[in-house]
Image (cartoon, rainbow, N blue to C red; front, side, top):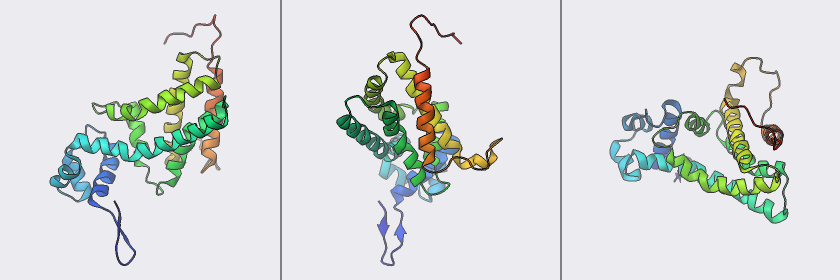
Length: 225
């Protein structure tokens, strides 16, 4: 919890310092490679403070994901509930907006250049660790709810197509947000790249087209790689 001092300045609590340091280090080095010493040095606290607030490194990792994912997934499900309440059969774009919009807003609302948690999520998707159950715990209920509504928006798609379409979407979104802060270093970057709220619009249009296009006719078998 942040406390406000008499002069109006905001003091970050020890708990928040630890979480912020952990997110930055986990994003940079990975969950398994980051030591407790790394975190205490970064946060400027002692080991007793981490044990007091979180009990262990595993407890700290769980709190890092809860702190960031719980509000994000609550916002996604709130949009989805409102959408389902208003439309019996929502459009694919509307469902994708509920899934993607809050993530992009989270990115835009973060202090400039400080999207360590998005980098951490991308790392978790590419480098599963022994702690991956913390990610799975937060996503299983969310994915179940969204898969059900995606099925209504794409009634001709099989469960397998919905599954992969949703995971292709997740990969696209996290890769896009992970590189947004490094656009100037990317090859062939246009002079006016997509920015701000336009990011969500491009992502929704792109992933909607992909999910529709991946539907395979019954007599077509995809090649096995």
